[in-house]
Length: 106
Image (cartoon, rainbow, N blue to C red):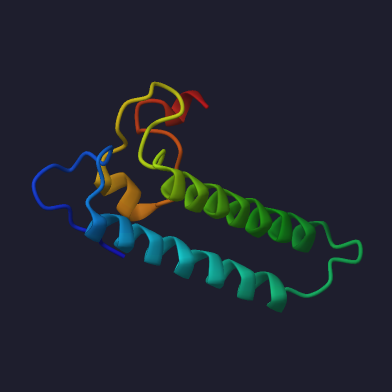
């Protein structure tokens, strides 16, 4: 998915169009993770399958949290330094909560 902002690539003041694009991207990502969870086989003692299920569940939770941030106007700010997360980073992973500089420290 590629979302293009018009003038500024920072995201703190999202236009309605950009907000809709991120909302669509997050909704699509959530639906994919929900389908993936539904299709995963039972874990019954399989540590690899359990880890996979846990990873998909964690990402789905992160997506839901991003949807909440988008709905409340807090989307696109780094939780580490409060700087705007560049739209290019949000294009790749719209549920991210950290800018590139803060991500390695997490």
